[in-house]
Amino acid sequence: MYYKFSGFTQRLVGATASAAYNPQGLKPIVTTESPAPVFGTTTKLASDLPATDSFLGKNKVPDLQKFFQKPDGLPVHLKRGVPDRLLYRTTMALTIGGTIYCLVALYMASQPRNQ
Image 1 (cartoon, rainbow, N blue to C red):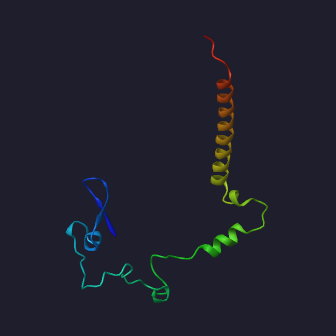
Image 2: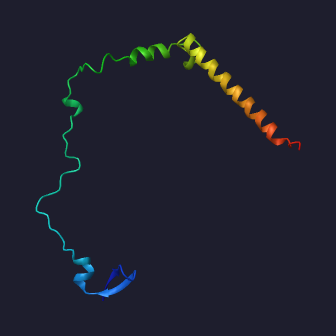
Image 3: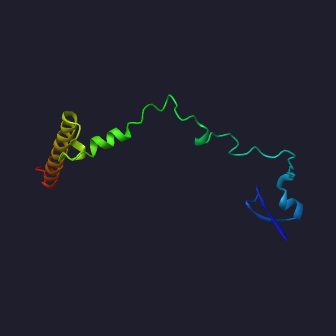
């Protein structure tokens, strides 16, 4: 026996095979065209690109590797001088200040209020 959902009673009711497979008189549509491919756009392979493109610019990686791997005793995050030191010290000051602020707020929240 076949069943279909009745919109009137909001329950499953008995039905014929054609009514169960094609509810509300809908008939299946057979398309004659094939669907458009999902990845139908053409792509460029890396081997198809010219060796020197203007948007790529000069490769700076070897120069930066030499600069950052120089054995001068400085940590990597301070190698570029004054701007790096300023950013590092500002970050440390904000971290320490935020920790102190959190501890003060926690202390104030732990004290009972006077009525």
